[in-house]
Amino acid sequence: MFYVAEALLNETGLRFRKHGGVHGAFGDHFIKTGLLDPKFHRWLLDAFDKRIQGDYGVEAAITEEDVEQLISQAGEFLREAQRRLE
Image (cartoon, rainbow, N blue to C red; front, side, top):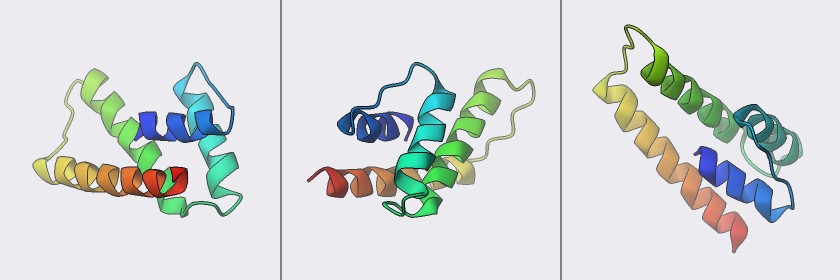
């Protein structure tokens, strides 16, 4: 979802070096303006948290259900981005 958000921002001429920049700008340019449903921003942030937890958490508890949900959300996120870019 991060790279999809980054691609959407890139299409508006915005580029960022850090995850926080992408997360904030995505919220500012697509959510606060009403261009996208706020759930996409929440999913982006939640997926990032899970990634950090998986990469750095000593006892990360990411379940199979978590993964299935993230995959489903990522698919919907991508479809919405493709629709926007057409």
